[in-house]
Image 1 (cartoon, rainbow, N blue to C red):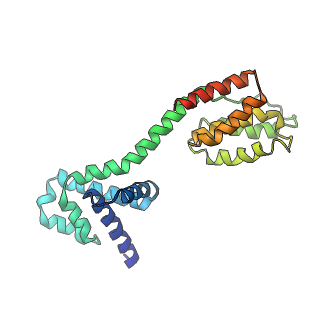
Image 2: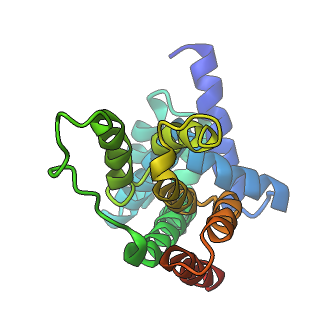
Length: 228
């Protein structure tokens, strides 16, 4: 193990121990929560510590100093040794802080997806004629639309739909499908947790289509969004 790797592990262990001992400021705790969510190495290390502590306590080995020494001497920093000896509550606490963000994120995604389900629409590609000059265009955007309810990550879909939507006033290639493009981009934004970016699109859809079924659908969707 290089010095830099050992320093990195020491740093991770010290942060975990300070959190568990209640020695962090609110700002430091918030940063740790965010890092556990985004830093794969830190998250895996915390989970490993949690599993190790849980296993030792389950087998009643916390009293066996020889085994603790054996576990901690193999490239394990001294502060990790202190963590293992400290308390069986470590495993539960680590699992709580690591799992909280994933539970919250997944629960929020489930709620949003459930709310969006009645507004998804399947676009049938089987009826397209290969001789139709617009078939390539239609296939492209319909495929994007159909991916919205199927995929969790909207990054790629938004990246493709945004320039198409922004070109509608200057490029008539996609203009006949303007309402569907706007509607599905708004859905993708909401599913991605970017409701604020969907609202202007929905407002424009209403303004461009007054007293139509599309306008009524947008109003119902906005009402559902207000309830989230």
